[in-house]
Image (tube, rainbow, N blue to C red; front, side, top):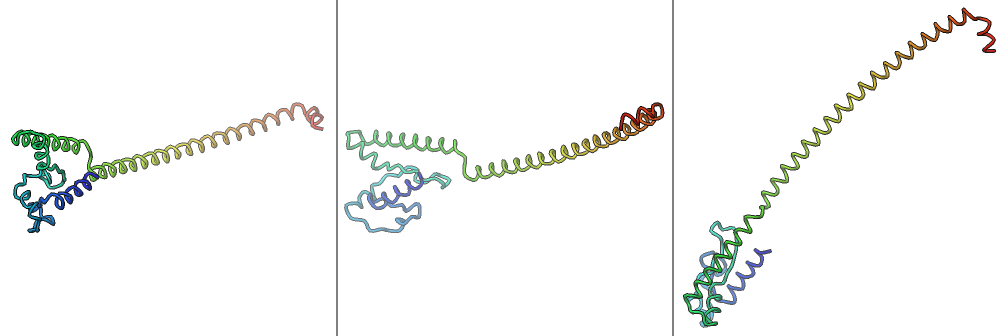
Length: 180
């Protein structure tokens, strides 16, 4: 959004103020016919501060000439107006740099997101592996308990048969009457 506003401002500067962007290879880089009333401003122009950052990545415009002219129009001496404009420009540039340093670039954010997704995927596979291992241990324990229960049943049946045999041998008549 800030870049769009800066581009719009560049367009306004190029068409409304008679400034050329010859040092930046823009549309005004070639000789453009300007009206004689604006031509003196082009020749008398002072630098537009930090149109492009030194690394060429960020547009940040301050129309220093307009600011100096405005201050001069309000009675500020030319040297003072230039000093005030330079200070304001420096503060704005420093503030913008501080703000840009406090944000993460889109590439860094995507890299971090990919790392987090990778970590999440590893964690998910570790959890699934642990669950699978735990499930297999539970199945093994369940099978062991079933075998123990079946063994106890067999022992109980065997004990019951021997008990019934003893009871039937000792009390054959009573046992028959009890079940009739």
